[in-house]
Length: 383
Ligand code: C2E
Ligand code: SIN
Ligand code: SIN
Ligand code: SIN
Ligand code: FE
Ligand code: FE
Image (cartoon, rainbow, N blue to C red; front, top):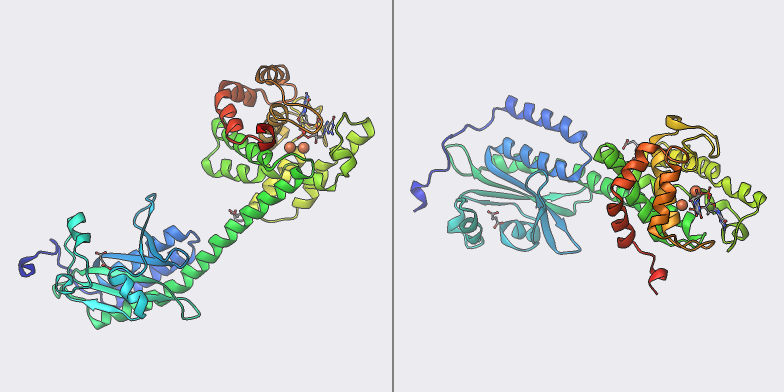
């Protein structure tokens, strides 16, 4: 049956050594600059596919915790996951040996169900494990259907894919580490924000809400997703300087004296000094926000008393997010306000305390802000 199978219209040639070198050079440059794991997976798959002139190539990564192999097939698509020991990829993973199959339909390890569902006809398969620097298997490379007239993969193809695999292993490990570092950074940053708030008995939900309000304001203001996301990660740290404010002041149930309030105001400068020396973009953004979130549009805020657009847009946005939350939720020193009263304050302070354009955005989209407030309610309030 498979004899008359036509793999495709264009029968191609194996690469000359020069072509192979060129492809390796091209991809090396791209891969070296790529920190995103998803994009890296796709680059590696493309590299493998071109090197050995296969129709398809997939780079599966092992998720040890879940016992699954996973991959991405296209930009924006969700990942695909399969049990780690299923199919031919799984076999190679288990044994640590490469597998070359000339005709999948004559091999009982191949699950024809995959083709039946996709309408694709798998014939030749080449699978080889990917190892990290320590020799541990971290995934497998899988190529399907050889596009030359030979229609089968050769020992040379295996060598080339194995070479690409050894290279992939290192880059992927670096990308995995990078991803882990970024996630760790985000966690630390968030925790730092919570420290600033928890000491003043405000729950962690305050920082979450401020993050969400800031993101929403930034997007409606016209910022890109990337910039808004940066602000979303940074704005929870606006009150980080409160870690240095004495408890008697921070947790005082009533109104602050003038002297106490002066001390309280120093949380902006303290936060700025904690964050300003970092070269990380998130922390730099957080430094601006910590410093400027109590500045006012009319110049009557602190610590600098700057006004209008001299206040960084990140500071103007966080100011609204912070006060909206301070008013709409309980504080140690006062109960939450009704929504109407909050709205009235923003109308009064439009062009005074706050950037008028941002106030308009808030009031026009007030329903979306209330939704965020409801989604991140303080648990204490529910009891
Ligand atoms: P916070 O509780 O996060 O409040 C942030 C900002 O929301 C305040 O900045 C203020 O602009 C606004 N805000 C909060 N409550 C009210 C209110 O009842 N009325 C009006 N009009 N605005 C309000 P601000 O005033 O610079 O205060 C900074 C921080 O100082 C506050 O952060 C809070 O931690 C502390 N604080 C301010 N006033 C008091 C107080 O009377 N007692 C205590 N214990 N802490 C206070
Ligand atoms: C496999 O069974 O490992 C390969 C099947 C496929 O993806 O076509
Ligand atoms: C970046 O801008 O994301 C990289 C540089 C940095 O994190 O400071
Ligand atoms: C991150 O995206 O979590 C780190 C990048 C940065 O600090 O700019
Ligand atoms: Fe503050
Ligand atoms: Fe705050």
